[in-house]
Every structure is written in C-alpha cells, then in structure tokens.
Image (cartoon, rainbow, N blue to C red):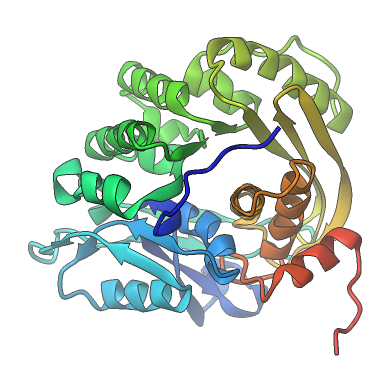
Length: 359
C-alpha cells in the first residue's frame, strides 16, 4: 500500500522543535580531559528533517529563539545552511539567569569506550513554545504541508509544548496533512506528568498515520501491553516487536505504518544496524548488518528521516526502510548529529554496500 499525500503544498515536511547546540571534544576525546571543542546546532526533529532538506524537498521548522543571542544567530545560520525555512518568536533572555538554548555536551566515544552525553536544559527557551505564537490556519490551510513529524521529546518537554504538539496534530488532521509520531520516551521528561502525558500521547497517536518506536516506547507512552518474555538477541527483538505491533494496531487502527530500528553495539565504532517496518499487512525486515561508526548520535533520527523521504517521494513501500536504514547509517559517519546526503546515489550506495571512490 502507499500513503496518499496532499498535493500543491508549500512544504513537504514540517517539524516543531526546541533548538540547541552540542559541544563535542575534537579528536574523539572524552569531555573531562578535553580543552578544545566543536559546536553544532542540533535537535532530534531537525536531524530527521535534514534528509529531506539536503535532498531538495521544502522543509519548515517551528521553534523559538532567545532574542539578541549569538547562539540563536548561530542556530538560524545553521538552519539556513540546511535549506530549512523557520519561524517562531524571539523571547527576551530576562537577565543572566533567564532563557537560553539547551546545551548538549557529548563525546563520540572510541573503541571500547562508549560515548557519554550530558543534557543541560536549564532555562531552555524551547519549553515556551505555544500555539498562540503561530498561525496554524495559515501554515496548514494556506501554505499546506504534506507530512508533519512530531517527536516525543518536544511532546513531553513542557506542558506548553505538549499542548502545542497536540494542536499541531489536530490542525494537520483537519487539513489532510499526514502525521508522523516518533514516541521517543524519556523518563526524566515524564516524571510527575505521567497521567497528563499518557492522555496527550494517546490522542496524538490516535491521529497519526506513521508510528515509530520500540517496545519500551509503546508500553510507557501508550500503555500497550508488552510482549511475552523471550530470549535475548536480534531474533527475539524482531519477534517481540511483531507481537507488540499487533496490539498497537488494535488500539490505533488508523495508523498504517509502524517502524523501529535494531542496533547491537560491538564497539563505539562498529554496530550491527537493522530495521523493521510494517505497512498495511506487509512486514519489511532488514536483518542487521555491520556498519562503521564515527559518531552514533543521530542514527535513529537519520533512519526516520530517510523513511519519511521515501514516503514523500511516493516510492514503493519496500524502499522506505531501505533508504531509512542507509540514511541512518550515513548519519553515523558524520560528526554532526544529522546526515548530510549529497544526493540519493550516495544513500543507495550505502544500502548496496558500495564504498568505492566515485569519480
């Protein structure tokens, strides 16, 4: 089956997000022993959208910025370099203890030393995202959007962003925009808000066409009963996901695509990488293959971005997870959290296992 997309839209893909920066030690060193760092603009949702924007599809970002902040200008310049339109309010900082953009401090790991990540989100300006700051009638009704991608990260970031994502889903449904929802459960975001977030996530999921998540995501975000205990390893993970999705489909029958990635870490620089997707009644399973990893952060987002790109290009469904697998693998070869594909050929070469020089 295929997903019918709205026509004559200004934007192929839209993402709401809280933008921040990541600082990373150079040369693969750990944070505590480093004195030289590189800084990049990042967010999970724009990591996803980068696949489409680098490959020429029109993308829009809804976010918020700290007014007169050099970090905000850095982020805006980065979004422009990724060929993304953006809009959102500029919020006054409010003094030295006021608002700022989130900081992710992360090294890449190396060999047997895994990467370490610290999220510093105190005063995060993205927590203030609200419906009143955007004209959703114009965005969805006049400009038009083919797919909106929502993440459980921005969905659970604050009560304001939770309501914002829910209203976006409602407007998208009203105007025929397809909805992608990556559940992306984070225990620290949910603490003390479990009842509220369960209700919001269930309503967003009930409106969604594409649901992405692993077994834990579906259990903890949507209250779906988990699979029966089984053995360890990839085969058990595949069987568990199949069992879980049977229950998810009964609870959310309007969704037609379900997907997740498979990852087994051999070392910081070598993973087994696979994927599972169900579209309609058709299972697509990509058995894990070895990939070389420069920096693992953003690999899952890269997979989702490639999957959505395949849907937006109206390819046969079997190509959606194949392209997603390859864009996820591509993302792990970049020091940025997002993949930067030069063209589709670069991605398909990864899928085919062809790393020869292109002249």
